[in-house]
Length: 104
Image (cartoon, rainbow, N blue to C red; front, side):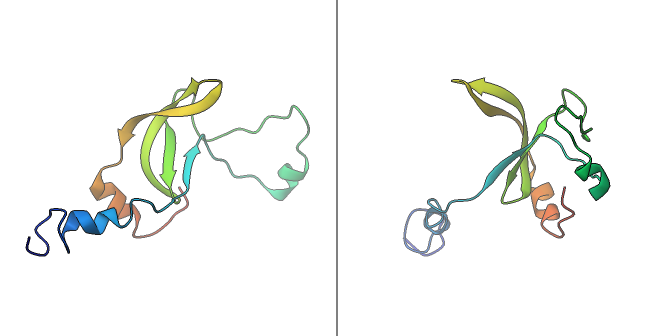
């Protein structure tokens, strides 16, 4: 097979990607965010309430190494939390987000 023909042969795109199949990446599911002053943080007490930036029912953000890659909804699987993927971020949006990290 000629190099770069997209098949599993030497130099193909698929074999290049297979090189990365066992690379571990950090997956984070983000419920919501907020900002608070140090004063407010130091005044937190048990059963205090911290307001977050998402409304009830909004999808959770699924991040791969800090980058938004999908959205989903919380589920319970065998007494553990999980997330059902409801939306995959488009490749264009993913590439655009790599230009600068605004922390969102």
